[in-house]
Length: 156
Image (cartoon, rainbow, N blue to C red; front, side, top):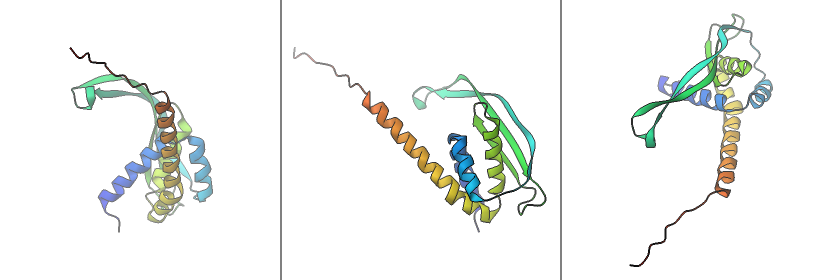
């Protein structure tokens, strides 16, 4: 039996990976899982704005950095599925309504324990690896343009 805390941590991880991944990658991998369930949208997908907060140096006083476009969706699985009535939520930056709905659908399906293991191992783990590879590539590109500044101290 999975504890509630572990379930919440895996749900947060799942949501983060899905929101940061490209929709085309998610759709391709989701199609290979073979999980076909009927669902209906309870809310959205709808696009709005979210306020971003920042801190100077990561520890200073909080300030409003600016707004970001955000799309959210909530879906419920239909009665014919093994996880009937499961409610899933999805948020994604930008205006991609299909991406938000797909995240919500995966979130709802992941509430079925057998599907959750399947989703985590065959969908989330490869997407997480792809995200890490993209992060590494961006870090290498950034490192190639790095400039080190130094100060000469006179011996007086």
